[in-house]
Image (cartoon, rainbow, N blue to C red; front, side):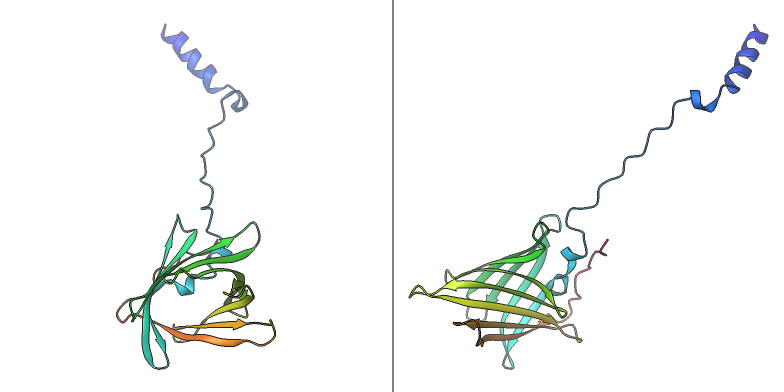
Length: 184
């Protein structure tokens, strides 16, 4: 019996490798849906900010990432107590950034755009009480000191622009910027 077992072991060891079952492939997880470099373009705006206008604090803004990294959510609070919220997303299907803003005054902005010369630039139109549409353009520009300039401009004719808000976002003292996931 021992000889039969030994013969069987030797025969089994001599079987060609091709006859043996291949190892099961190790499944790999797909990359997160919003992890591309384009999805990270607006990350410079993430954080807790005091917003300064003409040398005075005008309000506080909190920008967080949500929806599994797909949305930048904004929560604005002015020093007068008014609030506003926006959702900012990179729309990969169209290759543009979109912002949908709702202010505590009922005002709504629907903006689209992207990175231009190192700044996030989004624009759209707002219907005025008299029925005319007014062009809106907001530019967020990261500064060398870590602050962010926000310039909001309007135009009635698309040629001449007026600044309606010029703010400087300064990080709340003692709070480091949030970690940014590396782009893939």
